[in-house]
Image (cartoon, rainbow, N blue to C red; front, top):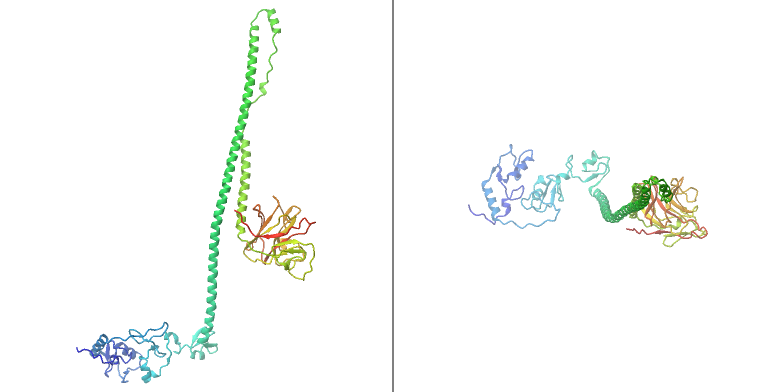
Length: 541
């Protein structure tokens, strides 16, 4: 076969339909050549078959045969002509659907053909009369999805009632009474909404990340706390074992001393018995010869000269019993049990206090709530009774019935803990109250009226209730810890220095914000002038 004429252009070997180099070219009865796939697809869309070039009509659909010459020349052209360099495309650009191999950038899309064309393949739509009637738009991808399936029109509008894309014909039918807007307008609305949703999602993500950090922090704290508890527990158990060993040693020593006492008593009795035996033996040696004499005179004279018998004890009343250790053992065990109970309670209270201290909150006193006779420190951490009624503006938040003050901070959920120094005071009160309490002093301080408070007066410690619960005083209180679990309805008080639990109010119905409250009481002749002080938590090992 002769070599290909490389001066021929690609148009000499291009299909008039796809405008690309022939692929399996076939000839129609009128002599024109097309790709087999292109001409069959073209005739599939026609009512009566005709030639796309000359418009010759065929009574029956032709069965085009392969044009061997054109096929060989097209193959030769592909192998001998260098493929031109093609430009690169930006992401999102629409490519020509007709190009084979590397696709060119589309310049128009046909809403009738559902095809996007590059400038070369668009040429039939600009030349062929029947194709000129097709509606061309700016390049679009997924053209089938952009067309109304009912009216075969471009989806250009958005129905706000049905929340779906519609064409212009739809607004004259099923969507006649529905509000519709251009797609761009709804796109801008939905984009703004999407931005809001994205912001909310990001916020939720951040909240969950913070929750993860919180959980991890709690786990880390729990690990450190467990190490501390184990170390402290080791000290306690060592002390307990030492106590048990001392109790054992004391018991053994007591038993040995009692045995030693019994042995000494027995030795003294034996010595006394042996002494009496010796005396009685001597008496027997004096009496025995006389008992054998037959001389009446000599017997009577000798009997009168006998010495008085030595004094002896009535040994029938003397009893030596083995020492009993049962009572000693029971007393030792009772003492050990008491010691163990005290140590275990101390361990439990200490662990409990350490647990609640982690919920420390920073609270300051609110001057707007302070009784006019109270004086607050500048930092809002101390309060004492001033003795002078200050002229202050009316404020519905102010406590006027009792000389007390609330904090600025309130709590409506979760857990919180704070400590108040009460050292050197002869009377005081503290705890938490509902925001809605009667601040004019017209009600008793009970949980029913919104008060959960501990009070100390005349060496009596009570939790105010109806009736109040009187509590034991082990020693003079110096600092009181207050813990609240809002969700569990729990208020607990602790002796911080002794690290023991004082009292807990359970089953509390919290539905409104809670405020810490301090009640420094009156001067009582200057004996109670020391302030109540909100103190930072200092956890002890």
